[in-house]
Length: 405
Length: 169
Figure 1 (cartoon, chains in turn red, green):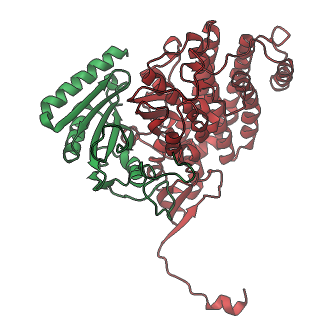
Figure 2: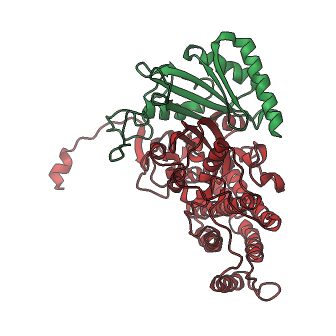
Figure 3: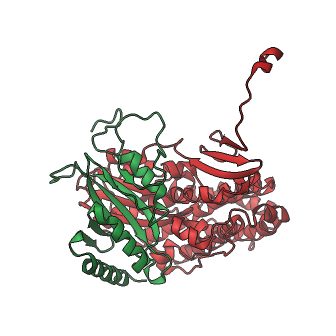
């Protein structure tokens, strides 16, 4: 631009406030935009604008059959595909009035908890990036690989498994783990923990291999604590930032670690137990800090509890069939309506389903956890500095695709 | 908490609602394990909601569903149904309870009172129902589009007469 042209530009008076758009081409936020009004460095108003990845999942459900709905329903939350399809499958089972075999219940629990850990590791790793702690990102993603391999072993895919079907799970877990994977994992074990696997050879038996991965991951979790969660950088960035009081958390209807980070002890796995959860002992971690730090700590402790659940489930899992029968794609589901919930990684995920007795659902409504946590965002991102926005945003574990559906 | 306890609490709740509101409760649909739904007229849904929140401590909103009922078999008129799924967190005994409070409005004049003054968290849920089914919530503080693009000018997409392009049934 020539100097003369530049001079002729008008300068508009905007008052003390400035409104701008954060996202959707993302600073780590995913495809999501916030319209932010600031005075100096302080945010006075935040207007979240989701919908950039809205794919009309609910409308699509009305065109597809009960079984072909499962693969596309897990797309909104690929990191946590088990948690997302869990309530759908539970709801369809309630409508059909069937119950899966015992072994399938345990396999479902193992799968759901493995994916909870994978999803939380992603959360924790990226939180490290946001807080200026890139080591945590590398650690989380390195360790996550062997948990993802485990889900691949059970479900056949790395992330989108379509593993749950009404009346059971798609296939049984293999009795033996491939040799290459065992070798790969024992090399990683030696490299990270600096010692050989106790007892020499890493086991090839599925049950024992899962326990070995659990032991390894438990030891790693103990190292995460001093590395990130107890480090002064992280505490300084997150403590006292983004306060969501207990009463507000309830009245806004938030879910999952956000709710438990505000001191509310609520977990669908305990309140309305489903499948194998009634037979398994675990705690529901809560924190009273109500800030970003508490939410991250709840996520961290939840991973520990998930390891506990997987251990118990693998040990208690009985032999037997894993599904009632192979459903044809065009099964008909009796007419009726149902509301079912399950605890996904990001919190309670609920489905309202209405059937008119045909081979397609009449209406499927997804109450996804990210959508319910989004409601808290304008209340949290207010009277904070611009630099705190990524921290608060990511402490909600918000996943744009899951919110938009 | 066992299933029979939850059923007992819900039965007591519905008994209480019937006693308090009488004819205003149009229909009750109790299916154990599936759903417990109370249908009221749109004029008195706010009154019932306020009663549920103050007397029964149902303070936790889990979702708002809108359905276009016009393609269901045996449906005489074209109506939309809006369902509020609510639970409780402040009362330990009611933690496992989910009540669905619903109302039916005609598709030609889809207006109903907003319940954001009762359940603050319903704000974005109602915005979603507004754009997806065209329900106009009177008294909503900020009724704007949420997920749909600004240039959307077709029918509300979750109505049954909207056909997704390339997916004719």
